[in-house]
Structure formats: structure tokens, C-alpha cells
Image (cartoon, rainbow, N blue to C red; front, side, top):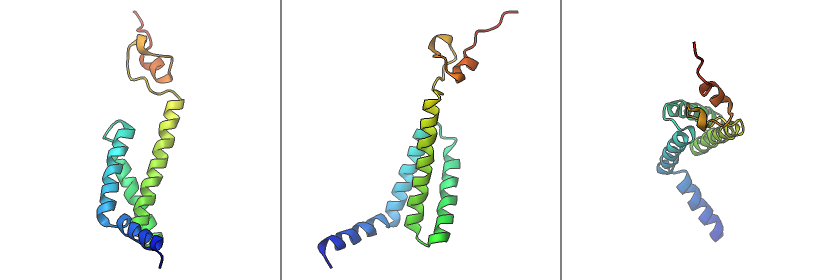
Length: 116
């Protein structure tokens, strides 16, 4: 066996180690919380990762592959969702008219009060 094959096998063993999977999953939890800007949706994301990883494990029988692919799937959906929200300009969180820039969310929350 060549030296490069041995190095690839060593890298494969490191990537498939349970501690590496735990560290990657922990990093995924913090990345999901940061991407969503709220921690209330993280349990839902974790449930999706667990369900997807479970289905992939049943189909492939490879635990590391299942966990990595599940996290990549959730990361892809998160990135697409973030791009969609930025393109639709759903970024305004203020309720004052001066900080609104004509976004849909702000038009609803920053409309002028009606007088009676």
C-alpha cells in the first residue's frame, strides 16, 4: 500500500470516530442557533437531523455517513432559507418608521398610527 492510501485511511478513521461526530454535531447546533437568530428553533432542527440521520442509517448502515449527510442537508436548507429571506428583505426588526426601508415586514409594523 502506498503512503497516500495509508494517510487517507487514517483521515477516514479520524472522521468516523464518535468524538469527531459529536464535535461536528455540537458545531452544527451552534451554527443552527446562529443562523436562525433564535434558539427556539434549534430543537426542531435537531429533530430533523436525527430523523434524517436515522433514515440514512437504515438505508446505508453507515453511521458517520448518515450524520454528516444529515447535517449537510440541514445546512443546505438553512442557507437557502437565509438567502431567500435576504432577497425578500425581511431584515427589519424595528417598529419605528424612521428605520423602515419599505420592506414588507416593516410596512406592517411601521405603519402610521391612525387617529380617532
